[in-house]
Length: 364
Image (tube, rainbow, N blue to C red; front, side, top):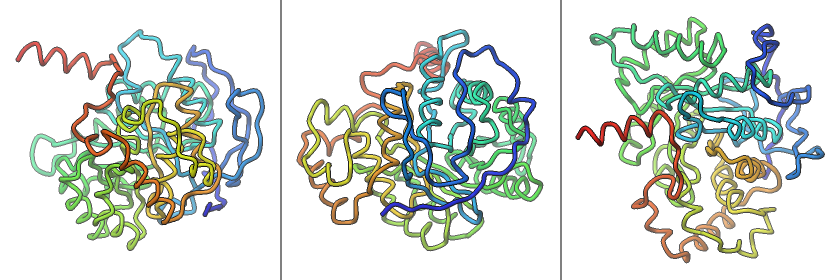
């Protein structure tokens, strides 16, 4: 079932920033906002023409803001060393935007990802049209100290060219009791629209669920995929019961799903849900769960971006089809061992994070 809804993201807050050029060579996105309709002009694989397609959308909790159910993650893939070429990630943002995506997730901990998102979104003139999901990783000088969190907030606003962050999470439940209270104050004061908590490991699912059950957050961000379905135990049911938004990290298991399937062909039954690539196969499985607000696959490859965003169109699998998809994956050698594989196998994202990790390894 494809959900179709209508809403507006609201007027631009920083037109002057949109008009500025950052010296980034990028083409201009055609005028018009997806949020005026759940139907949008989706680019074809060649990029030469567009056709109106119905996109799978979800409404953000406790609001009338509608977003497509696929967004863009930026961990590792958007982290580049100063001066390094970034044409690929600018093309990824362009591809996601043209395909209908409107939510981008990032974090100060993702190296230079905030800089990259902010620069290219401003160059495209879409800074105020995207829904920004961001995070706070803060302790403070003492219990209850807000100073570190405030510095992080102001830094993120500057990097992302925004005077308000749409969704701000407590990153990986760090100092969560203090940080959630700070986020609640920021929401009341208008610094952020929504607040949430995140983690990417099953071990912390009960903790995430406990915050949902306290009814003090608007969002939870959790790891969930056709391989790792542990979030179905408590997190997703709790979110669905209370109307809490769910952002999904690791829907492609950080390239490990693609590593396992290799060059295997899709099963014949994939045609029944309009699937033409493995990315669509895996992402449609995730967003078919009605508790999921938006899945956040990350990539620096424009072709992979086109495959990801294509999961927004066409029918979604029903419960029986989702079970069939899982059974098929269970027959593929290595699928059950994905958790033992390193993230991003056969890929090298040589940014500030990778450099810092290498330096630390050399010292130890």
